[in-house]
View 1 (cartoon, rainbow, N blue to C red):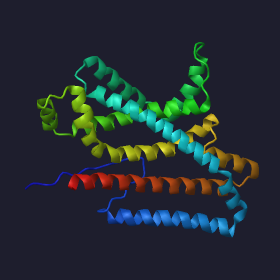
View 2 (view 1 turned 30 degrees about the vertical axis):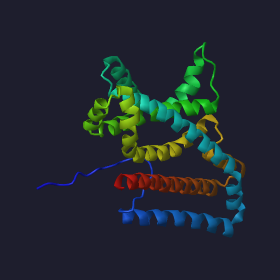
View 3 (view 1 turned 90 degrees about the horizontal axis):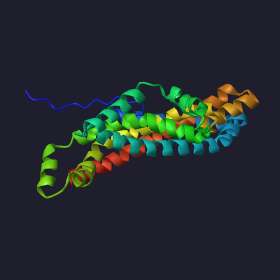
View 4 (view 1 turned 60 degrees about the horizontal axis):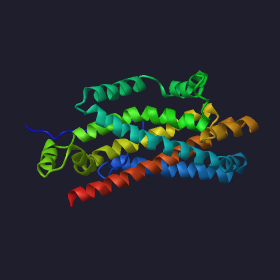
Length: 264
């Protein structure tokens, strides 16, 4: 008796809604509409302090997206290089890539943030990096290790017949990887990359400890000035929830478009 392979995805990111997952889709709409409704209700019924908080944090939201975008771009580059290194026949490249993955994944992100911002500053030849640069480097290198495994798995999921067909047409190894393997692997890579992006956005709240004025930092500043701790962190949590839900829906839409081209 044959059984259909089951793919199990566990991630720190928000669940990506799919058309076939009607329960998950309903949960997405319930969460999204609920977060919007609660935010609107609080701002209408108690504009002071909730509306004040909401008007205080927009610049922090922009910084959060700036940190997340720069970090994910760095992580994607490092992830691609690491993934290629992990499948390389060159033992030295494979060892370097594998060691990078094992070391980085074994150190908590918070420790990496402190290490890059404070510990490296103690080295005479290295000047203390600005908080934003330290945050982007730490998060980019941390998530680059996870992206490396995503790229490796995505590349290895492509049937080896694709490589053989490309080589028979006269493609060299680089052309085969760039023109044949990676475009097909992207369909497999996209969902976990989307989840990693969402997880990275949530982890970007850690950069507030480096005095980066992100969303959480702005919420802490408001709470410290007014002592509205419950109200400030409630708005911060709702804003994070709304952002991650919107991003998960966007990733779902992109995945559906890729699957559409597969079916046609």
